[in-house]
Amino acid sequence: MNFSKTEYGNRLSNIKRSMQEKGIDLLISQDTSNINYTTGYDAWSFYYAQCALIHIDLDEPLLFVREQDAGGAFLQNVWSQENILVYNEKYIHTWPTHPYDRLIEIIKERGWDKLSIGLEMDSHYFTAYSYKKLVDGLPEATLKDAERCVNWVRYIKSDAEIDLMKAASLISVEAMNTAIETINPGIRQCDAVGEIQKAMFYGTSDFGGEYSSIATLLPTGKGTSASHLTATQERFVKGEATIIELAGVYKRYHAPIARTVLLGKAEQKKIDAMKATNEALNEGLDAIKPGNTANDVAQKFWSVLDKYEIKKESRTGYSIGIGYPPDWGEHTLNIYKGDMTELQPNVTFHMIAVMQFGSWGVEASHSVRVTDKGFEKFIDFPSDLFIKD
Image (cartoon, rainbow, N blue to C red):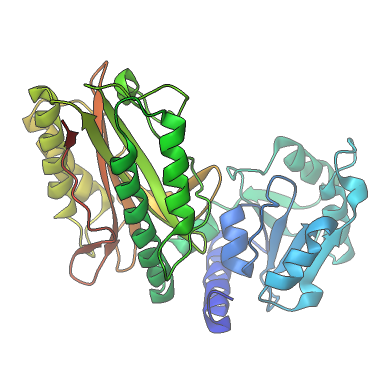
């Protein structure tokens, strides 16, 4: 158990309070990170139907899992074993039958089929087919979007969660050091990522790492003008830049970091762009404190870009914490103009500047925690352009 039973109980109470405010009697949580957050369950089983059920009047959540994964659920679920609901293997890939057929039966057996039921409508792995099953199978229920109910409860971290993110950040440092050391002219991109992945799993002597929710991103050369490119078997070329974006992971908590390395003498425009990027990041960071909003941070960040006449349309930050593929973001806070979400102590987010200029780009980022008076960087790592001449 990563956290005390008391902490899991507090999480459940906060979720139920939010459910009550939204008029939800029963929450069906399909988001893998939310399942982990509410039950402690952690396995690579999210590619098929599973969910947590939270009833407004029950003292514990229910965990709905495939029979093949029941062993892992019984080992990891922090709640009573009788609240693990196992569905038969006959539902696996036997369309039109589906695991939600059994879920609907359970809801009806418990007399919950006329309730107001909250669904995580934009959750990864909650398929259109699953939704259609619920609509067809529960005609008397009121199905509604839960509006990221659990995600917003996750928005403010406990001190115990912060400790796990600090451990993840130490792994991030090891992986980024390995990346910068390994990326050299003539080295295959895939070989560099192999070393990076090794560092991410080896972690430190105290904290072993895990798989990340997002593959190591490694756009290089002209690819630095495009986001989210992964490694190929092509070799690094002298004179080209490479952006490295990765996250150390500890007990599913992430601490992302992005940096840019240049092989060979840098063009002045790249040095200047990196300098402006860091100036903008630092200006935004200085606006982080309780009571300020995401908009306050964004306005400060973009004021620097405006000064240098740099155009950037994408957001420059988002909330982080627990993560499973395909994303380590929490889908709540956005550091973007107009987002009036209030910052509070122990809110954690990835402040990232993806800067693209047509055929080239630079990038840097910081994973941060809002403190009582300001902010704290999880990762102490230089963010200047790394030039390997």
